[in-house]
Image (cartoon, rainbow, N blue to C red):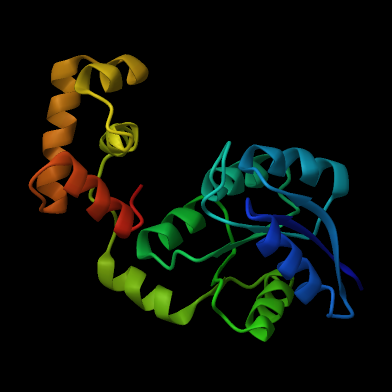
Length: 202
């Protein structure tokens, strides 16, 4: 049986290297490559891959959001999140989005090949060190709206700009920012963004 793969990564060299590596395996063939998260579902509909390997950080739509859309629209395609960001919060969000595998990019090539075959057998495959870190870290304390506000604040946007983009009042935005700062144990919104990002909560 040939396992059909879709690769989604915004870095061309990474995609090319992954393709070359994976196609050394006799039972793998890469049927599609995309560089944007919002191209994932369309490519899956066209090429019907068995497994989609999704990077987390991509333009258009991040890999976790793309995983959720794939689970909804192409449920026969198994999703493995493949990322340089071995953050505990990312793992929890990936699993919530329907991913069945989470492999960090510095894992050995044989570990990735093994993960692909195992998810096709119906197993969940998670980097062991990351699984331990996720259990130790617990769930994100941020509400969905607090997370939205921190993401909107990443670019340095003003409270007024954030309020306008999220259809909230300025007072509500300030309240969400204050709550997020308290929950991350930081002193200001930029520190809160950095702390939440480092923990994979954004």
